[in-house]
Length: 63
Image (tube, rainbow, N blue to C red; front, side, top):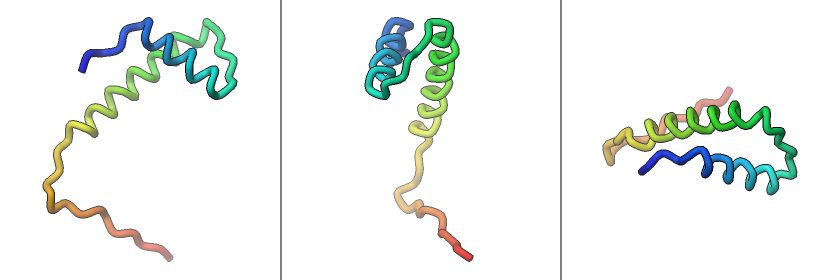
């Protein structure tokens, strides 16, 4: 999967801003883009980590 370009990040930021009715100032764009790039890298690490088919979710304990 190719890394998104700056233009596609800007398109995504614009679209999400419209959907959430959030005004996005131009000065914020570099920080938003950097956050999205880091989030994508972390998501790729999780996605690429293979688990055995026998893997079970952790138990949930409540008090």
